[in-house]
Amino acid sequence: MTKQELKQMSKLLPDKEIDSVIREGLVVRLPLFEARRALAKEKIAAFQKKHRKSYKTLKNKGLAVSADYNAHEDFVEWGHWENTLKDTESIIRWFNQLLKKSFGKS
Image 1 (cartoon, rainbow, N blue to C red):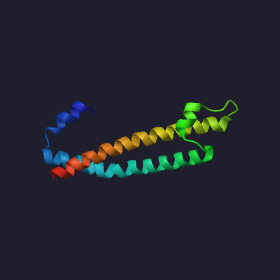
Image 2 (cartoon, rainbow, N blue to C red):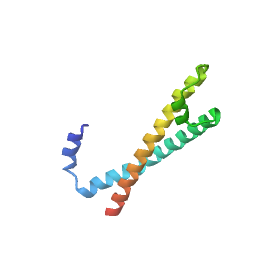
Image 3 (cartoon, helix red, strand yellow):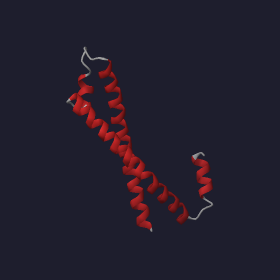
Image 4 (tube, rainbow, N blue to C red):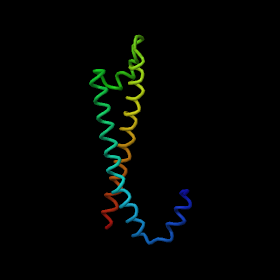
């Protein structure tokens, strides 16, 4: 469904019903993103412990010329989890802001 179609369909519902649908969707989805954030933090902590440095430091300095295949794989996966953490934290902040506004109206 496109945004335009959604806008057209939402005109058929009362504002309170739209607020309720959004609020309930946020309440259901928020724990999923919180779990994803927790997993990302665990993975990042494991990489930091294994490599004894932060991802930012490793990214800035680069891998050693002598780095093996596993080090390269770790670097790629670590970057994925760093991006996942950044994205999920952004979504969680946005969800929480909407929930505050939504419950503030009720």
